[in-house]
Image (cartoon, rainbow, N blue to C red; front, side, top):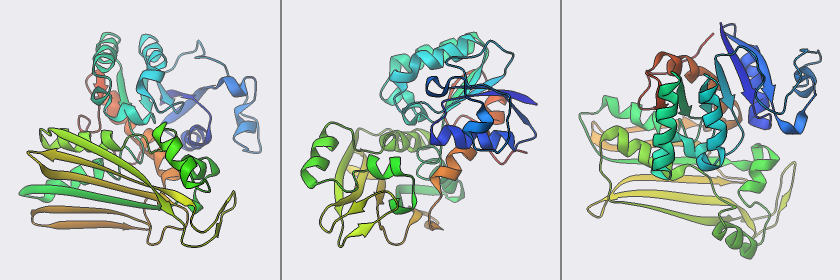
Length: 324
């Protein structure tokens, strides 16, 4: 049995903790979040029973094998936490979006963490549903059925009206256009990790891109839309369309088109390969991120622990699958 600590108890962290409790191969031995210090984890997870596992403000000094980290998007911002896990001899799987391919924005810090993990004989991985699965890993796996690939085009359409309040506000639903553009300029409205997904695909296919471009724009509501949490009036931003493109010699080789807005029709995950044979893979309804992200974190841990110590990406691990 793998002894694990849950670090971060926001929505995804709590969902991950609940999933851990249902896995016979995992034992939850600690929970960390400064916001909930002293709370019994059973109460926090609304289990209807005590777990006699109090939340602590920092890593507890107890025997453990790994930590699930759900406490921030920025690799640089979380680096000291990641380093502390390695020094404590803990494998780490994190939902930090930039950690999917940290060398893209933070090459020196990624190399430093890799050396630290290797020195302490542990592994580190950033993953999730997006980034981590639908717009990168799934696309890469699909290329295995091809003799050659000329281009990769992935579209993810999410009806944000079905998602949690934090996500609806994160994508700018209900703001004015001016507010949207101002916050987008400040990078306060955006999906983190889209370019990391693109670079992961390029790295997996050994494509040497010479330019990566990313754009973001509001999707305006055609009519007034009411969600459980907010109202979007006709003409207001209902969410975001964010597109990342990877080029080589002015040819667009990889396109990732993410559309997340309230009321989005035909939600789906779609992979189109210009390839031999040509392939189109569609997940009707799309992959439910709030459920799939904890699953990716949990299911990737055994593959990480089997791998060579150091910093890993989804392309350097054995194929993950459901664990018991």
